[in-house]
Image (cartoon, rainbow, N blue to C red; front, side, top):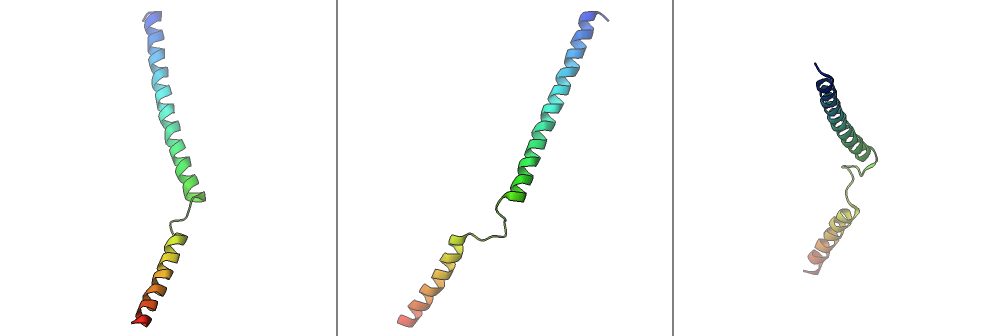
Length: 69
């Protein structure tokens, strides 16, 4: 094998390694983002404050309408 072919083979191997590492970094960043959101983001169990108030106000309005009739 000539020096040129050897160098081309090394370049191809390095390009493949770079691509694999780039893909792995992308995956790891996505995992970190997901875990940060899960750890520090809003909990899915929390109800929005506006939704609770609207529900409560709706009950009051319904009972007021019933008393007026």
